[in-house]
Length: 167
Image 1: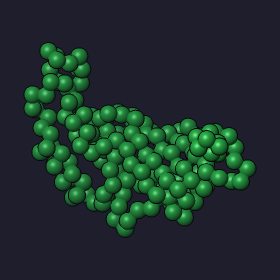
Image 2: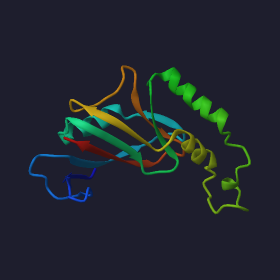
Image 3: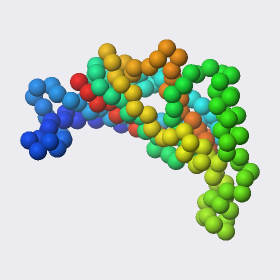
């Protein structure tokens, strides 16, 4: 896990710089998290890990941005209930069939040997980043909302960038 805290000050021209702001203004804290997956297609609840990064940042109000550093993973918000997680996977399998004749899997068109076109296409549908408000030092989530990380081409170690910005 890497970490940095960058005090941010606004220069007279409206540009943001990394100069220290003696008034205690906007701060930016970045962390990199690793998520080691165990299956080809799985959904992992990252809510507690994201909340820990926000808490450790000391930022009470602002925004937390989470970004996957991979094209065959995804992030989304939803309820973390076992039957629903199964349904999410079933829906993605219906929408993007692994056995379709995707050109990315065909050596006549692509040099990729992983046959992972479905993973790329599913990631495209879900997205690779989330931004949440930070309120009272915690990510602002609804009663049933969870930060869900989706492995689409595992198992393998994955990296996520988490950046908390605020005061």
